[in-house]
Image (cartoon, rainbow, N blue to C red; front, top):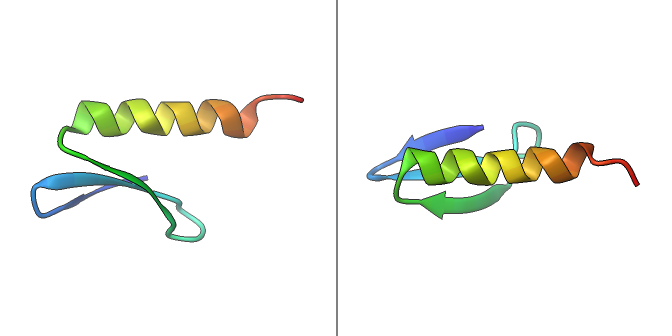
Length: 44
């Protein structure tokens, strides 16, 4: 999930609340979230 804190966007885990990065723009945060989802659902 992406949350806006002050002037930045933070990518967080929905279950644990772990931070996966802080970004200046919403598009950069969305790009990182897509990367996380890709590797999370990738088959071995």
